[in-house]
Amino acid sequence: MIYLLALIGLAVVVVLLWKSFGPAAEAPRGRVTGPDDDPEFLWKMNKNNRSRGPGPDRPDAGTTSSTE
Image (tube, rainbow, N blue to C red; front, side, top):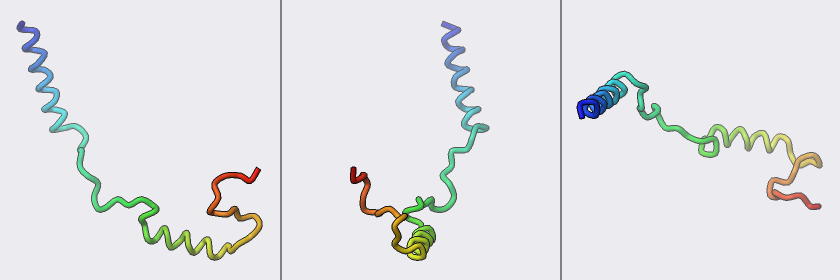
């Protein structure tokens, strides 16, 4: 019985030490945005697509499967 109490006490001490000295679980600073929500990324993509223009080597953006 004393070993069970010692094990529980040790677990409590480990958890408390982990909470005080372990890695911080803070939220990242600022708002994290994906590339599809980033206005600058979308502007660059639009600029690149317009500068390339339509061409035979450019695949159609609307299709996802091959024609064969």
